[in-house]
Length: 213
Image 1 (cartoon, rainbow, N blue to C red):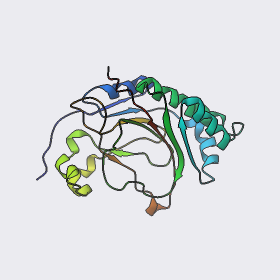
Image 2: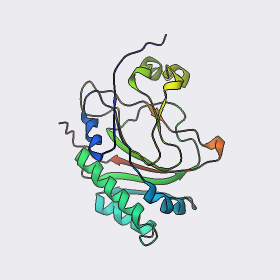
Image 3: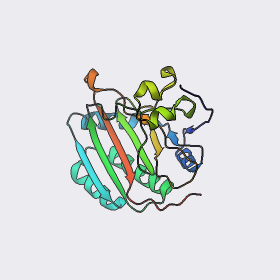
């Protein structure tokens, strides 16, 4: 039987400082909603090709990999934005190194609502539909823990949340080093059936220092 709990597990704002709220015990997703109209032209140009760029290391190393794969003359604003997001994520996590993925996505990455087995992850969907996520009062964690399907996990499908295109998300995972926190329940949007495409930026910590304010 599905049961409901009442807990506000999210922080949403239009300033990047909202992302620091991810360290609050009850918050497991922080969303920075922003205007990315200036990036649309470069994003659309990059979307003309299928890309998958992976980089790991400190920010300097990752930026070197990105500028080798993406022409800085053609994509200066997009590269600057990714640099800014790397620094923002470092400011929030205090981690020294990261893993980055920038990829065009035309398949359903994760159909099932789930939690991630990491500490903190940053996501930005530059083009296409954003990540789907659940407020805590819309999660049946018994169904989640028993590997049930989405019908068992989601209490009310009409209340599923979706990140805006261009928004910056930080998601709390299952190994976040603070007792009493719950990882955010989320999944990728359905895209394969529509023939659409997304441009997704994902940044993970390589070594989270266990720092919690």
